[in-house]
Image: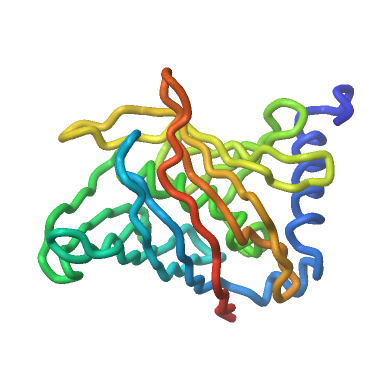
Length: 235
């Protein structure tokens, strides 16, 4: 990236590079896709050293406004399977856990959940790149030579995500300081989501394999790894 460029020109150059990579079918084709419905499978780990648990999930991601809903079922253990819902809509986030999909075990809401969930949504531009041309209130700013900071101008204050890009515009990782639930408190913790493989579909290039990590002082803790097994467009 040319350091002599003005900040706004650097931002536009990085955004153009990101769009060129993520929208191989062009912006007009991407505008027709107003959201996606994904099915996923993978593994989840509760804490460092704990056993990995398999999961299957369905996720709906909106492209015209900040919103998603991830419903995941985790493999049965001693007490049976759990259904986890991670979501953001109408300016608010929520996280619920239900035993067998029916008995409430945990429900989290509030300002920190709002921030954390919209940060997850912003990182999932890699899963639904038509967001780049359909979302009217997203804002971008270049940070460093190869990263774009993104936020929703209508969303919670301070909820930003940095998209780290290669020279070809490929978004290799998203990083943020996200609230992490610890007991009844939340602790702002460095977080990253990385794409390990992309695929082309319906004129978009979106993440197929991914992993998500917390970055602790003692090292990186990867707690989720998964892959997209199918994708359906919402037009």
